[in-house]
Image (tube, rainbow, N blue to C red):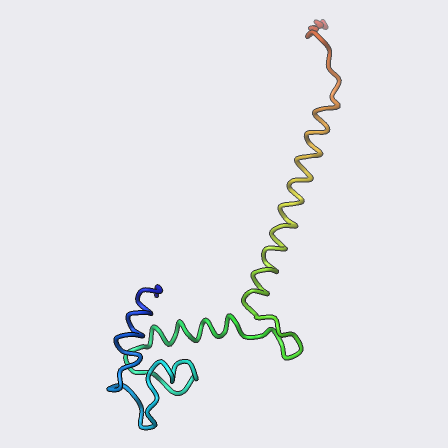
Length: 111
């Protein structure tokens, strides 16, 4: 579901009085308030519920939204894994730098 489709639904169906419930609430109002199932909008309702789960707090004690928290946690784990690779590359380059070398190549034959 993209933003264009959501806007189209909102302007053409979400606010139409024809789809209002017996209390006069539009589809958009009911979706935002989480009231009941919505006609003609199961895909949009599912996207809205997914968004609400993404923004739901991790716990009552922490007001940090679950989705961004998990995203940051994954990025942090990825960073530490990447950092391990960077350190390994630096160690490899240091080892190559300290290899003994001469101005010219000398070949010695041993028989």
